[in-house]
Amino acid sequence: MMRRFLPSGNQRRGVAFIVVIWVLVLLTVMLSGFIVIARTEMLQARHLFDGATARYAAEAGLSRVVREMLNPDVQTRWVPDGRVYEFDFEGAKVRVEIQDESGKIDINQADETVLVPMFQQLGLDPIEAQRLADAIIDWRDVDELVRPMGAEDDDYEAADLPYGSADVPFTTVGELQQVLGMTYELFEKLEPEITIYGGAGRPSPAYATEFGLMLYPNMNPQLAQQLVQQRRLLNPADGGASGLSMPDGTSLLAGGGGGTYTVRSEARLKNGAKTTLDATIRLGGAPGARAYSILKWREGSAR
Image (cartoon, rainbow, N blue to C red; front, side, top):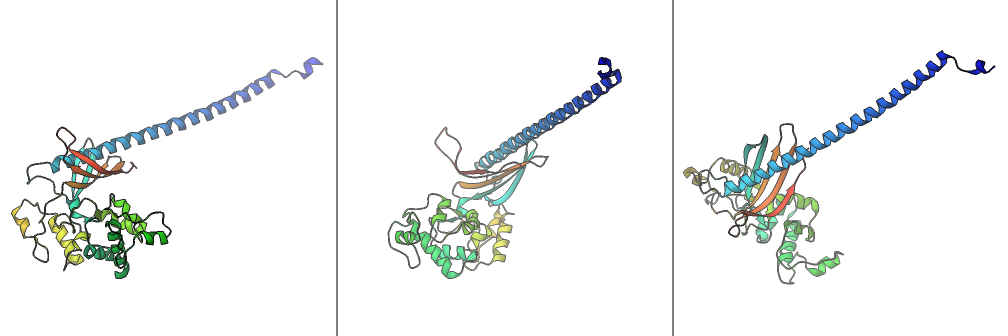
């Protein structure tokens, strides 16, 4: 009777075979999981490595700009008027653009004859453009007198804002967003064209973009585009460059730079990974100190 209920040898071998199959399946699943994890970690490490490589190549682009801007030879010195320079660095292709800050609109210096057409270029009607221009001037001036369409502390309070006009010059470009009537969408369009380091009421035509040149009398979009294209083909040290002029006869290359630059440096690796660095720098410093100081720094990620 006892022998009748014991499994036969074939049955025991069948059960063992099924157990072995399940163990193999389990091991296969576990091994597949380990492979996926290892591959994911490898891709993450590669991504981090490519990002770091591209970032340092972009920083090399910034260092190269400093070197070229300090070049005493005017024939070979790079020109900071927005033109593009490219070079290879440790297997990366580096592309840099340089613009002298004097070629931008200084929101601490520009008056309404510049601010109003500046806003009109962005599509605002004359009344709204004048309102924003007056609000900007009221923000930065030291008095409490309200311009005809401007805004002082009472106007900010009426708009339920927790602050009033600063009554001091702008300390950052981003501060412009706090001016009554300014929107983020409008600021986003305007940001590449404005500065607090220009030092003059109008952008220098030697370094201005088409947008900046449009703020000069008797200028039109076609002429502004043509002048910028021609200017970027010339070296200011060349004799033929002096013939390029504004509508009033002023040389397009008149006016020196201010020593403060906006630099956009993009580094791209052979596998497509890239990093973009945007910085505003000022050359010079105390003896023995760094050759430049960083005023603004923003960088993108590799992708």
